[in-house]
Image 1 (tube, rainbow, N blue to C red):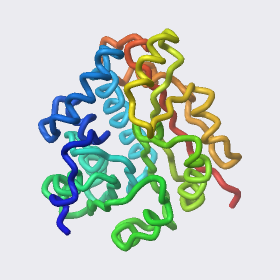
Image 2 (image 1 turned 90 degrees about the vertical axis):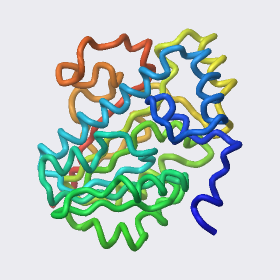
Image 3 (image 1 turned 30 degrees about the vertical axis):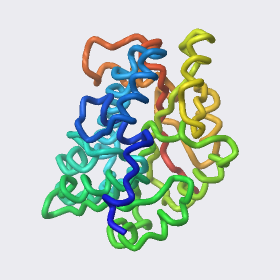
Amino acid sequence: MTEHSRIDTSVAHPARRYDYLLGGKDNFEADRQSAHEIEKRHPTARLSAQENRFFLHRAVRFMAGQGIRQFLDIGTGIPTSPNTHELAQQADPSARIVYVDNDPLVLVHARALLTGTAAGRTTYIEADLRDPQQILGDRELRSTLDLEEPVGLLLIAVLHFIRDDDDPVALLNKLIDALPSGSFVAASHATPEYMPAEQVAALRAVMERQWRDRTGAELRALFNRPDLELVGPGVQSVARWWADDAPQPRPAVESVASNGLVARVVRPA
């Protein structure tokens, strides 16, 4: 079975809907209709998507500045430039990146677009965050990343698709346990805390079953491990996270409704 034959265009997919909200063209009517229903309840949904991308940019540049030369980007979505490999390989052309997504359409575009530099390596695996063992055991990942050396783990706008009954803490622990000391984790997550209760209820009503927004405190709790040190300013709206390094002017947190964090993996020698 080919990737194309496994793409169900009649059902909205988060990666394709996100592509539409970012102004992309690799989406279908179901994705656009789903995005329109969200925009009716959250009129600044496009801004929220863009601010999550800007947060990704700042997080990757920060990690690269800390010496990280290999990245694991889970829930990458349809390629939107600049992407993780472009940012990382600007800092060091030999940087290595593994992209992960569960949408076969993403794989089609990734193979065509995510080529990277000759000195580095960029690859893509089709897998789901709900199966971290599949991700970590994948042959492409093992041949691209050296898990004995620090890794930048990116979980941008993907954890709100992991419900409580998926046991997100256990999933994250499996991933973080595989990272050596000196690694970093960056995550962003939809939050209800900046919205009126009626808006939150209306938005939840149109989201697919696989959805769980979380407050900043709930996001922090997902990463409550003694070997993780939050990088300042800790859990913040992505609109305010290192705002001086972001495009100006900065939007209101109410318009973005997404929090972010970056944490360093620190283990005893």
